[in-house]
Length: 478
Image 1 (cartoon, rainbow, N blue to C red):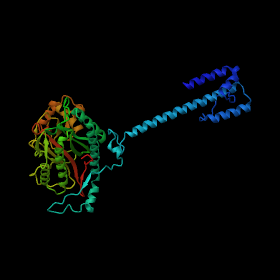
Image 2 (spheres, one colour; image 1 turned 60 degrees about the horizontal axis):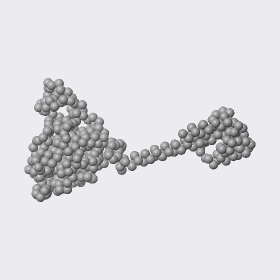
Image 3 (cartoon, rainbow, N blue to C red; image 1 turned 135 degrees about the vertical axis):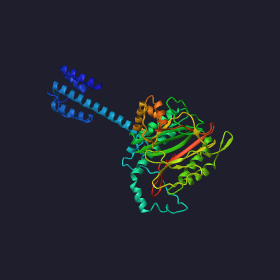
Image 4 (tube, rainbow, N blue to C red; image 1 turned 90 degrees about the horizontal axis):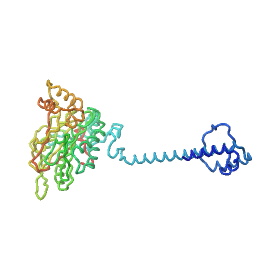
């Protein structure tokens, strides 16, 4: 507005030539007459210098003429306008800097935002992702193959040969770590289970840089409550709300090119469950410590059970021994295959099969205040295409269409009904049942102990590298 007012004064001064002297006193300076518009650059605002130049010109010219007044006033307006424009520019720059600083303040160390939104690949553009916890392979009592693997040059060379695979797994692990640490702060009693799962999955998809079957989520988010130990995720319309006294197992996976991170933790808000969580966490860490190249799987199970069942928990005045759930176990992992054939028991008496070099395992343990035995219960939500399923002719067009959707979006990775909805599938329930009946797809219903008991779970993914054992999903949280 001030620039418009100044220009109006100039026009008035040009027309009122008879009042030249009065205008000169008011403006306090004059310039030489200008017949044509000035082509010189707009001067930087320096009022003191301008006043000195105007006074010198006034003394030299002896007062000037009407054109001098007009030219002088026009120059003043031009200067004032430039000063205002420069002021607006400074103000704009100040605002931009302020906003920039505000944005930077919302970022954590390492460039991640809160809540996390920057893809892990952007945080580590060189492709070198953080290592997990490095541990030595245990020395088996009947041989000495695990000795000096750190310094053995042959083993170090094998390590370097597989570095690309290790980096893919570390990439997925970092996405898992940052997602779960955010969710541990985010989840509160009173939230619906659907709200929790969708927030977790959306965050994980952003961090992993979801790209079809190249990168994404490896299986649906498990959020099993209380006596339900595993494989529960809400279907559409599920109104279950997380309560203060609930014991919630958060189990989800990420993958890069089929290299899967399978990792889980238990979330509680009431301190009375602390001993239960401590028992299961200690048992999982024991399993990780015992695992290694040439170790028998049954030996790991015996060590896990011994630690798990050494704990007791007191709930509402009653003491319970923490029991290892004997029909749940860890497992080996291969590309695009969450259960690759070998199982890691959590009780004694399992297989005597040995772990081998460059295998990948999910070491997971489950503790319960109930019977320590789970069974299928509740509405099924988890499904997975059978990895070894032979070709089966399908008569229903809807089954063929659904199988095409599964192959395109999930392949042999696990999925749930919510994910089918997200992929655009409709009216698929009959087709899904048909695929399950024919063995093309396998259903994984929720696994539950007796009602009224409480179960807990902890899990990590480990790599049996030639030189060492890497707990690739290890974080500051657990």
